[in-house]
Amino acid sequence: PQDSNGFKVILGGSTFQMLPGCVNRAAYSAARAVCRQEILTKGICEIPGFLQPEAVRKILCSAEQLKKRPGCGFRSFEEHNVYLEEKADVSRIRSASFSSSKVLINQAELAEGCPELVELFHWDGLRQLLQEAFGLEKLFCSADPLGGVYLNFFEKGDQLGWHFDR
Image (tube, rainbow, N blue to C red; front, top):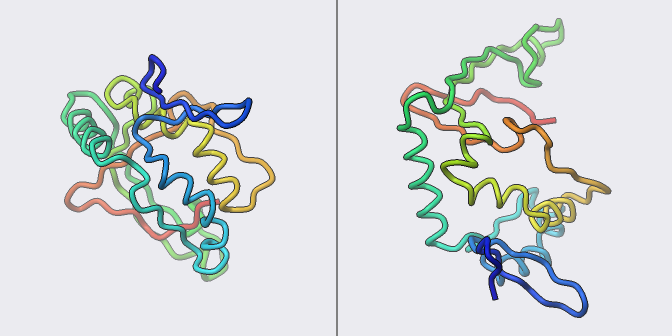
């Protein structure tokens, strides 16, 4: 069954979990069972079929429409080191400079034009999956109304300079 927002309801005992309509239940369940071990052994976890094919098409189409909307998103140009710091340090690795450029569409704009993506990233099941996969005691969704979820577009000449997310 689905609720009025298109979320699937999974009943299990006396509790239930809302599953966004874009997520494939079998792939999600399989991921919950294997991702932690794959992260530990391979450093990566692939989840084939996690999103329903129609949902992927819809999200991509919506993203392309947002990209074309006048005034939507902003262009970012940054010079940084591998730690995303602007100022160079005397240490060799910190002194190397990298460039990043892209178009970013923020959460508020995504919520209007591609709500499925925002719903997916705020879905507690995704947070739980990531928390388990990386063995984190706690993991929280960002409360930032603009940067909580964003979409990057890379056009000809754009790049994402080498960096570590921390």
